[in-house]
View 1: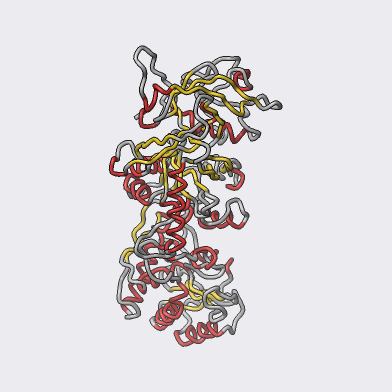
View 2: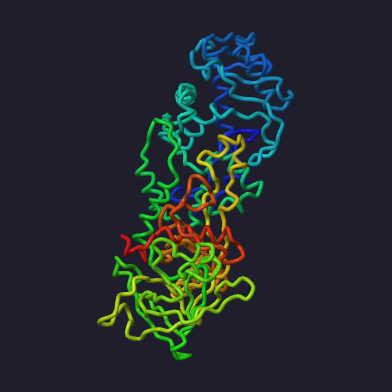
Length: 565
Protein backbone atom coordinates (compact mmCIF):
# COMPACT_ATOMS: atom_id res chain seq x y z
CA UNK A 1 0.00 0.00 0.00
CA UNK A 2 1.20 3.53 -0.52
CA UNK A 3 0.94 6.79 -2.31
CA UNK A 4 2.83 8.72 -5.00
CA UNK A 5 5.56 8.11 -5.71
CA UNK A 6 3.37 5.07 -5.42
CA UNK A 7 4.63 2.01 -3.60
CA UNK A 8 4.59 -1.07 -5.81
CA UNK A 9 2.00 -2.70 -3.56
CA UNK A 10 -0.56 -0.26 -4.95
CA UNK A 11 0.68 -0.43 -8.54
CA UNK A 12 -1.72 -2.06 -10.96
CA UNK A 13 1.07 -3.16 -13.26
CA UNK A 14 3.01 -4.70 -10.40
CA UNK A 15 0.37 -6.68 -8.56
CA UNK A 16 -2.56 -7.23 -10.90
CA UNK A 17 -3.39 -10.83 -10.04
CA UNK A 18 -5.57 -13.32 -11.78
CA UNK A 19 -8.04 -15.19 -9.61
CA UNK A 20 -5.84 -18.28 -9.69
CA UNK A 21 -2.89 -16.25 -8.34
CA UNK A 22 -4.87 -15.30 -5.25
CA UNK A 23 -5.08 -18.89 -4.06
CA UNK A 24 -7.54 -19.24 -1.18
CA UNK A 25 -7.87 -15.45 -0.81
CA UNK A 26 -10.96 -15.11 -2.98
CA UNK A 27 -12.60 -11.78 -3.69
CA UNK A 28 -11.41 -8.48 -5.14
CA UNK A 29 -7.82 -7.33 -4.84
CA UNK A 30 -7.74 -4.73 -2.08
CA UNK A 31 -5.72 -1.52 -2.28
CA UNK A 32 -5.16 1.36 0.10
CA UNK A 33 -6.87 3.61 -2.44
CA UNK A 34 -10.12 1.78 -1.65
CA UNK A 35 -10.03 3.52 1.76
CA UNK A 36 -8.84 7.01 0.86
CA UNK A 37 -12.10 8.58 2.07
CA UNK A 38 -11.95 6.71 5.37
CA UNK A 39 -8.31 7.67 5.89
CA UNK A 40 -9.13 11.31 5.15
CA UNK A 41 -11.93 11.20 7.72
CA UNK A 42 -9.46 9.75 10.25
CA UNK A 43 -7.12 12.68 9.62
CA UNK A 44 -9.96 15.17 10.15
CA UNK A 45 -10.80 13.39 13.42
CA UNK A 46 -7.22 13.73 14.68
CA UNK A 47 -7.17 17.44 13.82
CA UNK A 48 -10.46 17.95 15.66
CA UNK A 49 -8.99 16.18 18.72
CA UNK A 50 -5.91 18.38 18.61
CA UNK A 51 -3.72 15.40 17.73
CA UNK A 52 -2.67 16.50 14.24
CA UNK A 53 -1.53 19.80 12.78
CA UNK A 54 -0.61 21.30 9.40
CA UNK A 55 3.09 22.05 9.23
CA UNK A 56 5.05 24.13 6.75
CA UNK A 57 8.62 23.29 7.67
CA UNK A 58 10.74 22.29 4.68
CA UNK A 59 11.97 18.72 4.46
CA UNK A 60 15.46 19.85 5.47
CA UNK A 61 14.14 21.82 8.46
CA UNK A 62 12.01 18.86 9.49
CA UNK A 63 15.06 16.58 9.57
CA UNK A 64 16.89 19.15 11.68
CA UNK A 65 13.99 19.53 14.12
CA UNK A 66 13.53 15.78 14.39
CA UNK A 67 16.66 15.25 16.45
CA UNK A 68 18.76 12.08 16.67
CA UNK A 69 18.86 8.86 18.66
CA UNK A 70 20.79 10.69 21.36
CA UNK A 71 19.14 14.12 21.14
CA UNK A 72 15.46 14.92 21.55
CA UNK A 73 13.69 16.76 18.77
CA UNK A 74 12.33 20.31 18.72
CA UNK A 75 8.70 21.17 18.28
CA UNK A 76 7.70 22.85 15.04
CA UNK A 77 6.73 26.51 15.39
CA UNK A 78 3.45 25.54 13.68
CA UNK A 79 2.68 22.74 16.14
CA UNK A 80 0.21 24.78 18.17
CA UNK A 81 -1.96 26.17 15.37
CA UNK A 82 -5.58 26.26 16.49
CA UNK A 83 -7.93 23.52 15.35
CA UNK A 84 -9.96 25.76 13.02
CA UNK A 85 -6.88 26.96 11.16
CA UNK A 86 -5.58 23.39 10.81
CA UNK A 87 -8.92 22.23 9.42
CA UNK A 88 -9.05 25.11 6.96
CA UNK A 89 -5.49 24.49 5.71
CA UNK A 90 -5.99 20.71 5.46
CA UNK A 91 -9.19 21.13 3.46
CA UNK A 92 -7.32 23.56 1.21
CA UNK A 93 -4.67 20.88 0.70
CA UNK A 94 -7.47 18.47 -0.21
CA UNK A 95 -8.91 20.96 -2.72
CA UNK A 96 -5.56 21.46 -4.46
CA UNK A 97 -5.11 25.07 -3.32
CA UNK A 98 -1.41 24.68 -2.52
CA UNK A 99 1.68 23.47 -4.39
CA UNK A 100 3.60 20.33 -3.48
CA UNK A 101 5.83 20.76 -0.45
CA UNK A 102 3.98 23.84 0.87
CA UNK A 103 2.22 21.97 3.68
CA UNK A 104 2.13 18.54 5.27
CA UNK A 105 -0.12 17.10 7.95
CA UNK A 106 1.72 15.74 10.99
CA UNK A 107 0.51 13.73 13.95
CA UNK A 108 1.06 15.50 17.28
CA UNK A 109 2.65 12.88 19.52
CA UNK A 110 5.96 13.46 21.35
CA UNK A 111 9.09 15.15 20.00
CA UNK A 112 11.10 13.78 22.94
CA UNK A 113 10.17 10.14 22.32
CA UNK A 114 13.16 7.76 22.12
CA UNK A 115 11.41 6.23 19.09
CA UNK A 116 12.04 8.55 16.14
CA UNK A 117 8.87 7.31 14.44
CA UNK A 118 6.80 8.89 17.24
CA UNK A 119 8.29 12.37 16.85
CA UNK A 120 5.34 14.01 15.15
CA UNK A 121 5.45 11.89 11.98
CA UNK A 122 4.11 13.17 8.66
CA UNK A 123 0.81 11.46 7.87
CA UNK A 124 -0.33 13.36 4.75
CA UNK A 125 1.43 15.23 1.96
CA UNK A 126 0.48 17.10 -1.19
CA UNK A 127 1.17 15.37 -4.50
CA UNK A 128 -0.35 16.70 -7.73
CA UNK A 129 -0.14 13.42 -9.55
CA UNK A 130 -2.72 11.08 -11.03
CA UNK A 131 -3.24 7.87 -9.12
CA UNK A 132 -3.58 4.66 -11.13
CA UNK A 133 -6.74 3.68 -9.24
CA UNK A 134 -8.42 7.01 -8.38
CA UNK A 135 -7.18 9.24 -11.19
CA UNK A 136 -7.22 12.94 -10.30
CA UNK A 137 -9.75 12.62 -7.49
CA UNK A 138 -7.08 13.23 -4.86
CA UNK A 139 -4.08 15.51 -4.65
CA UNK A 140 -3.13 14.62 -1.07
CA UNK A 141 -2.07 11.14 -0.10
CA UNK A 142 -1.58 9.40 3.25
CA UNK A 143 1.79 8.05 4.32
CA UNK A 144 2.22 4.31 4.77
CA UNK A 145 2.47 4.33 8.58
CA UNK A 146 -0.85 6.19 8.78
CA UNK A 147 -2.78 4.28 6.13
CA UNK A 148 -1.53 0.82 7.14
CA UNK A 149 -3.47 0.31 10.41
CA UNK A 150 -6.60 2.04 9.08
CA UNK A 151 -6.75 -0.18 5.98
CA UNK A 152 -6.08 -3.26 8.13
CA UNK A 153 -8.95 -2.40 10.44
CA UNK A 154 -11.28 -1.67 7.52
CA UNK A 155 -10.49 -5.04 5.96
CA UNK A 156 -11.13 -6.96 9.17
CA UNK A 157 -7.48 -7.84 9.73
CA UNK A 158 -6.91 -9.12 13.28
CA UNK A 159 -3.14 -9.59 13.10
CA UNK A 160 -0.93 -7.66 10.72
CA UNK A 161 2.19 -9.76 10.16
CA UNK A 162 5.25 -7.68 9.31
CA UNK A 163 8.96 -8.21 9.04
CA UNK A 164 11.38 -7.07 11.70
CA UNK A 165 12.14 -3.66 10.21
CA UNK A 166 8.59 -2.63 11.16
CA UNK A 167 9.10 -3.35 14.87
CA UNK A 168 9.96 0.27 15.60
CA UNK A 169 6.85 1.34 13.70
CA UNK A 170 4.50 -0.70 15.91
CA UNK A 171 3.94 2.06 18.52
CA UNK A 172 2.75 4.38 15.74
CA UNK A 173 0.59 1.58 14.29
CA UNK A 174 -1.06 1.12 17.68
CA UNK A 175 -1.42 4.88 18.22
CA UNK A 176 -3.32 5.34 14.97
CA UNK A 177 -5.37 2.14 15.28
CA UNK A 178 -6.57 2.98 18.81
CA UNK A 179 -7.71 6.45 17.80
CA UNK A 180 -9.69 5.47 14.72
CA UNK A 181 -11.26 2.62 16.72
CA UNK A 182 -12.22 4.91 19.61
CA UNK A 183 -13.72 7.35 17.10
CA UNK A 184 -15.99 4.61 15.77
CA UNK A 185 -14.54 4.90 12.26
CA UNK A 186 -13.70 1.16 12.32
CA UNK A 187 -15.09 -1.71 14.36
CA UNK A 188 -11.89 -3.67 14.84
CA UNK A 189 -8.58 -3.06 16.58
CA UNK A 190 -5.84 -4.89 14.64
CA UNK A 191 -2.53 -5.92 16.16
CA UNK A 192 0.88 -5.81 14.48
CA UNK A 193 3.31 -8.72 14.98
CA UNK A 194 6.83 -8.85 13.55
CA UNK A 195 8.96 -11.79 12.48
CA UNK A 196 12.16 -12.22 10.51
CA UNK A 197 12.09 -11.92 6.76
CA UNK A 198 12.41 -15.12 4.75
CA UNK A 199 15.67 -14.42 2.94
CA UNK A 200 16.82 -16.94 0.36
CA UNK A 201 20.35 -17.17 -0.95
CA UNK A 202 20.88 -16.78 -4.70
CA UNK A 203 17.71 -14.75 -5.18
CA UNK A 204 16.14 -11.37 -4.45
CA UNK A 205 12.76 -10.83 -2.83
CA UNK A 206 12.62 -7.05 -2.89
CA UNK A 207 9.62 -5.95 -4.97
CA UNK A 208 11.57 -3.11 -6.50
CA UNK A 209 14.37 -5.42 -7.55
CA UNK A 210 11.90 -7.86 -9.04
CA UNK A 211 10.29 -5.03 -11.00
CA UNK A 212 13.75 -4.08 -12.27
CA UNK A 213 14.33 -7.64 -13.48
CA UNK A 214 11.05 -7.56 -15.40
CA UNK A 215 11.33 -4.05 -16.80
CA UNK A 216 14.92 -4.54 -17.97
CA UNK A 217 13.92 -7.90 -19.52
CA UNK A 218 16.42 -9.96 -17.57
CA UNK A 219 13.50 -12.37 -17.25
CA UNK A 220 10.52 -12.94 -19.53
CA UNK A 221 7.94 -11.64 -17.08
CA UNK A 222 6.44 -12.02 -13.63
CA UNK A 223 5.73 -15.69 -14.31
CA UNK A 224 9.26 -16.47 -15.52
CA UNK A 225 10.06 -19.81 -13.83
CA UNK A 226 13.22 -18.29 -12.32
CA UNK A 227 11.22 -15.61 -10.47
CA UNK A 228 10.34 -16.08 -6.76
CA UNK A 229 6.72 -15.13 -7.44
CA UNK A 230 3.67 -17.34 -7.00
CA UNK A 231 3.03 -17.39 -10.73
CA UNK A 232 6.71 -18.08 -11.50
CA UNK A 233 7.05 -20.90 -8.97
CA UNK A 234 3.80 -22.48 -10.14
CA UNK A 235 4.78 -22.22 -13.80
CA UNK A 236 8.11 -23.85 -13.07
CA UNK A 237 6.25 -26.75 -11.48
CA UNK A 238 7.04 -26.51 -7.76
CA UNK A 239 4.13 -28.25 -5.98
CA UNK A 240 2.22 -26.28 -3.33
CA UNK A 241 3.02 -29.08 -0.88
CA UNK A 242 6.74 -28.36 -1.33
CA UNK A 243 6.27 -24.70 -0.39
CA UNK A 244 4.26 -25.71 2.68
CA UNK A 245 6.91 -28.23 3.68
CA UNK A 246 9.61 -25.59 3.29
CA UNK A 247 7.69 -23.12 5.46
CA UNK A 248 7.07 -25.78 8.11
CA UNK A 249 10.76 -26.62 8.28
CA UNK A 250 11.88 -23.02 8.42
CA UNK A 251 9.33 -21.97 11.01
CA UNK A 252 8.95 -18.39 12.26
CA UNK A 253 11.78 -16.58 13.96
CA UNK A 254 12.70 -13.19 15.39
CA UNK A 255 16.29 -13.59 14.18
CA UNK A 256 17.40 -12.50 10.74
CA UNK A 257 18.69 -15.36 8.62
CA UNK A 258 19.70 -16.11 5.06
CA UNK A 259 18.41 -19.54 4.14
CA UNK A 260 20.23 -21.71 1.66
CA UNK A 261 18.27 -22.12 -1.56
CA UNK A 262 19.10 -25.82 -1.54
CA UNK A 263 16.68 -26.34 1.37
CA UNK A 264 13.82 -25.19 -0.85
CA UNK A 265 15.09 -27.50 -3.59
CA UNK A 266 15.32 -30.42 -1.14
CA UNK A 267 11.69 -29.91 -0.11
CA UNK A 268 10.69 -29.88 -3.78
CA UNK A 269 12.59 -33.12 -4.44
CA UNK A 270 11.05 -34.81 -1.43
CA UNK A 271 7.50 -33.98 -2.48
CA UNK A 272 8.02 -34.68 -6.19
CA UNK A 273 9.83 -37.97 -5.54
CA UNK A 274 6.71 -39.32 -3.89
CA UNK A 275 4.16 -37.72 -6.21
CA UNK A 276 5.72 -37.72 -9.68
CA UNK A 277 5.40 -40.67 -12.07
CA UNK A 278 8.57 -41.80 -13.82
CA UNK A 279 9.19 -41.51 -17.54
CA UNK A 280 11.94 -41.84 -20.13
CA UNK A 281 13.07 -38.60 -21.74
CA UNK A 282 16.19 -38.33 -23.84
CA UNK A 283 17.53 -34.80 -23.44
CA UNK A 284 20.49 -35.17 -25.77
CA UNK A 285 19.61 -37.96 -28.22
CA UNK A 286 22.05 -40.39 -29.81
CA UNK A 287 20.54 -42.72 -32.43
CA UNK A 288 20.90 -46.47 -31.91
CA UNK A 289 19.96 -48.94 -34.67
CA UNK A 290 19.39 -52.57 -33.66
CA UNK A 291 20.72 -54.41 -36.72
CA UNK A 292 19.26 -57.83 -35.82
CA UNK A 293 15.74 -56.53 -35.10
CA UNK A 294 12.93 -56.81 -37.64
CA UNK A 295 12.36 -53.54 -39.46
CA UNK A 296 8.68 -52.86 -38.68
CA UNK A 297 8.32 -54.83 -35.47
CA UNK A 298 7.37 -53.04 -32.25
CA UNK A 299 7.27 -54.73 -28.87
CA UNK A 300 5.43 -53.18 -25.92
CA UNK A 301 6.73 -53.29 -22.37
CA UNK A 302 4.38 -52.60 -19.46
CA UNK A 303 6.41 -50.80 -16.81
CA UNK A 304 5.34 -49.15 -13.53
CA UNK A 305 4.59 -45.44 -13.50
CA UNK A 306 6.12 -45.20 -10.04
CA UNK A 307 8.44 -47.72 -8.34
CA UNK A 308 6.81 -47.23 -4.91
CA UNK A 309 3.19 -46.50 -5.79
CA UNK A 310 1.50 -49.44 -7.45
CA UNK A 311 -1.84 -47.58 -7.41
CA UNK A 312 -0.57 -45.35 -10.23
CA UNK A 313 -0.58 -48.36 -12.53
CA UNK A 314 1.60 -49.13 -15.53
CA UNK A 315 2.58 -47.31 -18.69
CA UNK A 316 3.35 -48.82 -22.08
CA UNK A 317 6.84 -48.31 -23.50
CA UNK A 318 7.32 -49.53 -27.12
CA UNK A 319 10.61 -51.01 -28.31
CA UNK A 320 11.73 -51.23 -31.93
CA UNK A 321 14.58 -51.26 -34.40
CA UNK A 322 15.62 -47.67 -33.78
CA UNK A 323 15.86 -46.12 -30.34
CA UNK A 324 17.47 -43.04 -28.86
CA UNK A 325 19.74 -43.05 -25.84
CA UNK A 326 21.37 -40.20 -23.95
CA UNK A 327 24.57 -39.05 -25.59
CA UNK A 328 26.08 -38.84 -22.11
CA UNK A 329 25.44 -42.57 -21.56
CA UNK A 330 27.93 -43.48 -24.28
CA UNK A 331 31.62 -42.76 -23.70
CA UNK A 332 33.47 -42.61 -27.00
CA UNK A 333 37.03 -43.73 -26.23
CA UNK A 334 38.17 -43.03 -29.79
CA UNK A 335 36.35 -39.71 -30.19
CA UNK A 336 37.04 -36.18 -28.89
CA UNK A 337 36.04 -37.01 -25.31
CA UNK A 338 38.26 -40.08 -25.23
CA UNK A 339 41.19 -38.07 -26.57
CA UNK A 340 40.54 -35.31 -24.02
CA UNK A 341 40.61 -37.97 -21.28
CA UNK A 342 43.81 -39.61 -22.63
CA UNK A 343 41.88 -42.71 -23.66
CA UNK A 344 40.88 -43.48 -20.09
CA UNK A 345 37.38 -44.13 -18.74
CA UNK A 346 35.95 -41.60 -16.30
CA UNK A 347 36.05 -42.93 -12.76
CA UNK A 348 32.95 -44.97 -11.96
CA UNK A 349 31.60 -44.97 -15.52
CA UNK A 350 29.54 -48.17 -16.00
CA UNK A 351 27.33 -47.37 -18.92
CA UNK A 352 27.85 -47.86 -22.65
CA UNK A 353 31.29 -48.28 -24.28
CA UNK A 354 32.29 -49.06 -27.88
CA UNK A 355 33.35 -52.60 -26.99
CA UNK A 356 30.95 -53.17 -24.12
CA UNK A 357 27.39 -54.10 -23.32
CA UNK A 358 24.62 -52.16 -21.63
CA UNK A 359 21.06 -52.95 -20.60
CA UNK A 360 18.24 -50.85 -21.97
CA UNK A 361 16.07 -50.54 -18.88
CA UNK A 362 13.08 -52.91 -18.85
CA UNK A 363 14.10 -54.26 -22.29
CA UNK A 364 17.24 -55.96 -23.63
CA UNK A 365 21.00 -55.97 -23.38
CA UNK A 366 22.73 -54.54 -26.45
CA UNK A 367 26.32 -54.31 -27.64
CA UNK A 368 27.91 -51.81 -30.00
CA UNK A 369 29.23 -53.12 -33.31
CA UNK A 370 29.98 -49.92 -35.22
CA UNK A 371 30.08 -46.16 -34.68
CA UNK A 372 28.94 -43.84 -37.45
CA UNK A 373 30.60 -40.45 -37.05
CA UNK A 374 30.14 -36.89 -38.21
CA UNK A 375 32.87 -36.39 -40.85
CA UNK A 376 33.65 -32.88 -39.61
CA UNK A 377 33.60 -33.24 -35.82
CA UNK A 378 34.29 -36.99 -35.51
CA UNK A 379 31.40 -37.08 -33.05
CA UNK A 380 29.24 -40.24 -33.04
CA UNK A 381 25.85 -39.71 -34.71
CA UNK A 382 24.63 -43.30 -34.76
CA UNK A 383 25.48 -46.59 -33.11
CA UNK A 384 24.87 -49.89 -34.91
CA UNK A 385 24.13 -52.46 -32.24
CA UNK A 386 23.08 -56.06 -31.61
CA UNK A 387 20.41 -57.02 -29.09
CA UNK A 388 20.28 -60.29 -27.16
CA UNK A 389 16.74 -61.77 -27.08
CA UNK A 390 17.48 -63.99 -24.09
CA UNK A 391 18.11 -60.93 -21.89
CA UNK A 392 14.54 -59.63 -22.13
CA UNK A 393 13.10 -57.73 -19.16
CA UNK A 394 16.11 -58.01 -16.88
CA UNK A 395 16.90 -61.66 -17.46
CA UNK A 396 20.55 -62.74 -17.30
CA UNK A 397 21.20 -66.11 -19.03
CA UNK A 398 22.77 -68.78 -16.87
CA UNK A 399 26.54 -68.72 -16.99
CA UNK A 400 26.78 -65.12 -18.25
CA UNK A 401 27.99 -62.15 -16.25
CA UNK A 402 25.39 -59.64 -15.20
CA UNK A 403 25.56 -56.42 -17.20
CA UNK A 404 26.03 -53.60 -14.70
CA UNK A 405 25.17 -50.60 -16.83
CA UNK A 406 21.47 -49.69 -17.18
CA UNK A 407 20.35 -46.75 -19.31
CA UNK A 408 17.05 -45.25 -20.45
CA UNK A 409 15.89 -45.09 -24.04
CA UNK A 410 12.96 -44.05 -26.24
CA UNK A 411 11.78 -45.81 -29.39
CA UNK A 412 12.17 -43.49 -32.38
CA UNK A 413 8.90 -43.88 -34.30
CA UNK A 414 6.60 -43.56 -31.26
CA UNK A 415 8.52 -40.97 -29.28
CA UNK A 416 7.28 -37.39 -28.88
CA UNK A 417 9.59 -34.51 -29.64
CA UNK A 418 9.55 -31.55 -27.25
CA UNK A 419 11.53 -28.58 -25.97
CA UNK A 420 13.02 -28.52 -22.48
CA UNK A 421 13.85 -25.37 -20.53
CA UNK A 422 16.66 -26.18 -18.12
CA UNK A 423 16.61 -23.55 -15.38
CA UNK A 424 19.34 -22.83 -12.89
CA UNK A 425 19.67 -20.21 -10.17
CA UNK A 426 19.07 -16.69 -11.43
CA UNK A 427 22.04 -15.29 -9.52
CA UNK A 428 25.57 -16.65 -9.17
CA UNK A 429 26.26 -15.24 -5.69
CA UNK A 430 24.57 -16.00 -2.38
CA UNK A 431 23.71 -12.36 -1.72
CA UNK A 432 23.28 -10.58 -5.05
CA UNK A 433 24.81 -7.12 -5.03
CA UNK A 434 26.55 -7.45 -1.66
CA UNK A 435 30.06 -7.46 -3.11
CA UNK A 436 29.45 -5.96 -6.56
CA UNK A 437 27.23 -3.11 -5.37
CA UNK A 438 24.61 -3.85 -8.05
CA UNK A 439 22.53 -7.00 -7.87
CA UNK A 440 22.18 -7.00 -11.67
CA UNK A 441 25.94 -7.55 -11.98
CA UNK A 442 25.50 -10.91 -10.26
CA UNK A 443 22.92 -12.34 -12.66
CA UNK A 444 23.80 -15.84 -13.82
CA UNK A 445 23.83 -15.46 -17.60
CA UNK A 446 23.55 -19.24 -17.95
CA UNK A 447 20.47 -19.63 -15.77
CA UNK A 448 18.52 -20.91 -18.78
CA UNK A 449 19.54 -23.56 -21.28
CA UNK A 450 17.06 -24.52 -24.00
CA UNK A 451 17.12 -28.05 -25.41
CA UNK A 452 15.20 -28.27 -28.68
CA UNK A 453 15.43 -31.94 -29.65
CA UNK A 454 14.30 -33.82 -26.56
CA UNK A 455 12.53 -37.15 -27.19
CA UNK A 456 9.81 -38.30 -24.76
CA UNK A 457 8.29 -41.71 -24.38
CA UNK A 458 4.77 -41.77 -25.92
CA UNK A 459 2.87 -41.95 -22.61
CA UNK A 460 4.16 -38.48 -21.67
CA UNK A 461 2.98 -37.00 -24.96
CA UNK A 462 -0.45 -38.58 -24.49
CA UNK A 463 -0.74 -37.26 -20.93
CA UNK A 464 0.27 -33.77 -22.09
CA UNK A 465 -2.35 -33.71 -24.85
CA UNK A 466 -5.01 -34.80 -22.35
CA UNK A 467 -4.28 -32.00 -19.87
CA UNK A 468 -3.96 -29.34 -22.61
CA UNK A 469 -7.34 -30.38 -23.99
CA UNK A 470 -8.84 -30.32 -20.52
CA UNK A 471 -7.53 -26.80 -19.89
CA UNK A 472 -8.76 -25.61 -23.29
CA UNK A 473 -12.25 -26.99 -22.82
CA UNK A 474 -12.69 -25.95 -19.18
CA UNK A 475 -10.87 -22.63 -18.70
CA UNK A 476 -11.15 -21.22 -15.19
CA UNK A 477 -13.06 -24.26 -13.91
CA UNK A 478 -13.73 -24.08 -10.17
CA UNK A 479 -14.45 -27.80 -9.96
CA UNK A 480 -10.82 -28.79 -10.09
CA UNK A 481 -7.95 -26.30 -10.12
CA UNK A 482 -5.43 -27.68 -12.59
CA UNK A 483 -2.56 -26.01 -14.37
CA UNK A 484 -0.16 -27.07 -17.07
CA UNK A 485 2.44 -27.66 -14.38
CA UNK A 486 0.09 -30.11 -12.67
CA UNK A 487 1.57 -32.59 -15.16
CA UNK A 488 5.00 -33.37 -13.73
CA UNK A 489 7.43 -36.29 -14.00
CA UNK A 490 10.72 -37.56 -12.88
CA UNK A 491 12.58 -37.96 -16.16
CA UNK A 492 14.77 -40.82 -15.06
CA UNK A 493 18.35 -39.91 -14.24
CA UNK A 494 17.75 -36.32 -15.38
CA UNK A 495 15.50 -34.57 -12.84
CA UNK A 496 11.95 -33.47 -12.16
CA UNK A 497 10.12 -31.70 -14.98
CA UNK A 498 6.71 -30.06 -15.42
CA UNK A 499 4.67 -29.03 -18.45
CA UNK A 500 5.04 -25.33 -19.26
CA UNK A 501 2.03 -23.07 -19.76
CA UNK A 502 3.21 -22.15 -23.28
CA UNK A 503 2.74 -25.74 -24.45
CA UNK A 504 0.50 -26.60 -27.37
CA UNK A 505 -0.61 -30.01 -28.54
CA UNK A 506 1.93 -29.97 -31.36
CA UNK A 507 4.60 -28.01 -29.48
CA UNK A 508 5.25 -29.35 -25.99
CA UNK A 509 7.54 -27.53 -23.57
CA UNK A 510 8.75 -28.91 -20.24
CA UNK A 511 10.52 -27.01 -17.47
CA UNK A 512 13.23 -28.40 -15.24
CA UNK A 513 11.80 -28.00 -11.74
CA UNK A 514 14.77 -29.37 -9.82
CA UNK A 515 17.63 -31.80 -10.44
CA UNK A 516 17.71 -35.23 -8.83
CA UNK A 517 20.45 -34.08 -6.48
CA UNK A 518 21.98 -30.78 -5.49
CA UNK A 519 24.61 -30.15 -8.16
CA UNK A 520 25.18 -26.44 -7.52
CA UNK A 521 28.83 -25.40 -7.19
CA UNK A 522 29.01 -22.32 -4.98
CA UNK A 523 32.33 -21.37 -6.52
CA UNK A 524 30.98 -21.03 -10.01
CA UNK A 525 27.64 -20.82 -11.73
CA UNK A 526 28.87 -22.79 -14.71
CA UNK A 527 31.79 -25.00 -13.72
CA UNK A 528 31.09 -28.61 -12.65
CA UNK A 529 32.52 -29.97 -9.45
CA UNK A 530 35.82 -31.80 -9.61
CA UNK A 531 34.42 -35.29 -9.15
CA UNK A 532 31.85 -34.99 -11.93
CA UNK A 533 32.28 -36.62 -15.31
CA UNK A 534 32.17 -34.26 -18.27
CA UNK A 535 31.71 -35.10 -21.92
CA UNK A 536 33.32 -32.44 -24.07
CA UNK A 537 31.69 -30.95 -27.18
CA UNK A 538 28.72 -33.24 -27.47
CA UNK A 539 27.15 -30.56 -29.59
CA UNK A 540 28.06 -27.13 -30.82
CA UNK A 541 27.00 -25.52 -27.54
CA UNK A 542 29.80 -26.67 -25.28
CA UNK A 543 28.70 -24.80 -22.15
CA UNK A 544 25.17 -26.16 -22.35
CA UNK A 545 26.49 -29.68 -22.75
CA UNK A 546 28.74 -29.31 -19.73
CA UNK A 547 25.83 -28.09 -17.62
CA UNK A 548 23.61 -30.99 -18.66
CA UNK A 549 26.28 -33.52 -17.88
CA UNK A 550 26.80 -31.95 -14.50
CA UNK A 551 23.14 -32.43 -13.70
CA UNK A 552 22.97 -36.00 -14.90
CA UNK A 553 26.18 -37.66 -13.82
CA UNK A 554 26.07 -36.71 -10.18
CA UNK A 555 24.55 -40.07 -9.47
CA UNK A 556 27.98 -41.74 -9.60
CA UNK A 557 27.64 -45.38 -10.50
CA UNK A 558 23.97 -45.66 -9.56
CA UNK A 559 22.10 -46.47 -12.80
CA UNK A 560 18.76 -45.05 -11.63
CA UNK A 561 17.65 -42.98 -8.66
CA UNK A 562 15.47 -45.73 -7.18
CA UNK A 563 18.43 -48.13 -7.07
CA UNK A 564 20.59 -45.51 -5.41
CA UNK A 565 18.04 -45.06 -2.68
